Structures are given as C-alpha cells and as structure tokens.
Length: 144
Picture 1 (cartoon, rainbow, N blue to C red):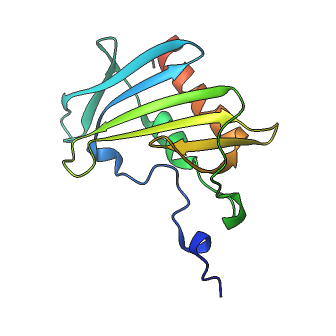
Picture 2 (picture 1 turned 180 degrees about the horizontal axis):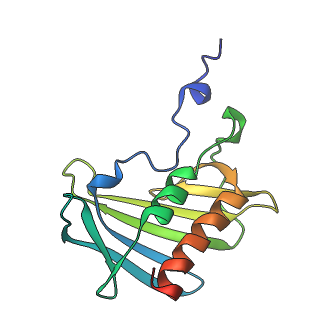
Picture 3 (picture 1 turned 90 degrees about the vertical axis):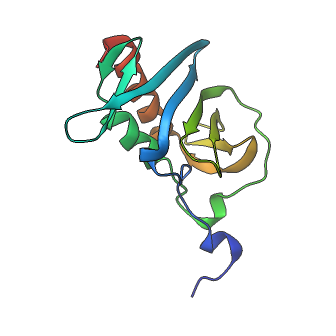
C-alpha cells in the first residue's frame, strides 16, 4: 500500500472547481489573452467571452484539467531552467483562494515542469501542455 507523502498528494495541477473561475489571463508566446465570464446562459452556466465575443470553453477546460502527474516520482522541487510554454492566472470567485497561477516550462522532449503559485509542483507530460496550448490557440485564433 502506497502511503508516502507524494503518493497521497493530488495529481491534478488545477484542483479548483472551474465553476468558481471568473477570469483567465493567459500568456503564450509573448502575447497576452484574457477570457472572462459575462453573466449566465439559460441553463445557468457561465457565459465565457474573449474580446467581447462569446466562446466555447469546454475544450480549454478539459485540457486544463488533463494536466496531471503520472506518478509520485514526478513531484519535484526543481526550479525551471527551460523555456516557458504557457502561463495562466485563474481568478476565482472565492474568498479563501482568489487567484491561482500556473506556469508550464519545457523540461525535456517528454515533460514540462509545472509551477503552481510560483512554486515547483511536478513534471507533467509535455503532450498535455501542447494540447492545452492548442485549445488556447483555437479560442484566440479561430474565435471558437
């Protein structure tokens, strides 16, 4: 039975409930983007917008929650030395934790080093980081 500290830690980079997120600031390849909620739809779900245009955020949300640690050995306290792939600031409608920042840095060809609130968290599959980047690009380049 696994009972070490790392085997008991949460594996997802983002543990907050996405329903609490009201704004996401994204920094990607030198450009900054902001996604914001603007009211609720007829099903009482948040309406997300990018540059005043309503967007679908399901793919972005799915890829964000896909960022996770594969094994307890992937947790680290190592500082990033590679290129920043993407940086996110999530603003929450939550008094206890009003903001979460996530930065993903290239580690090697297979992994990215994730920092959460400025502290090293773990190595995550680089393919998951690329999928998140593609979800962001779909929103900001295609307006979907």
